[in-house]
Amino acid sequence: MNYLGQNIRILRKLTSTDQAELAQYIKVNRPTVSHYENSKSKPDYEAMNLLVRFFNKMKKANVSFEFLVNNDLSQWDESKIKDAIFVKPIMKGSLETYSNSELELKQKIIELEELNKHYLDTVESQANLIKILTEKCRKNQ
Image 1 (cartoon, rainbow, N blue to C red):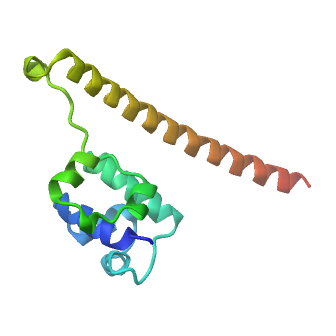
Image 2 (cartoon, one colour):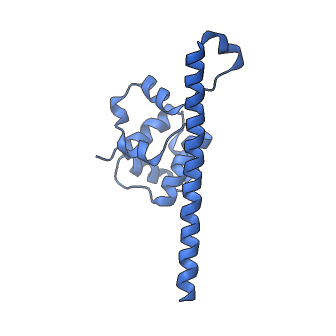
Image 3 (spheres, rainbow, N blue to C red):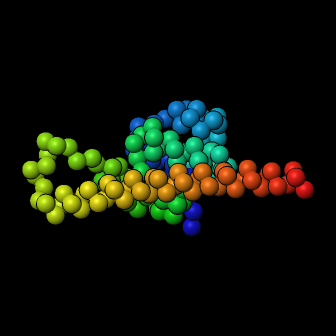
């Protein structure tokens, strides 16, 4: 099942974003965002990319296309959603409250999140390169 529409609404509200702000960022009009949220239409590839970037860059969340589509966030409580999407950096002042094993685990999680972001950027770059090369090959035929 596809949960995209309801998840867009849930994350938008959780991040205190109105439809107009989201619409402006993803380059659509406000009624289009409403249609996405009510599953009357689905974002195209560009809008979906911008949607994920909006939550990741503008709202400091960590979401992916797969997360938005495959998780029924309406069944999650707010704290579970926040734990799943918001990266909590370790601050120097709070280090003494964690044991060494907890700190090591938190550091590994942060490293994995960074690797994941790098991987996603790399995949996107490779996809763009393939697209460019394919277009050049077609022109040369």
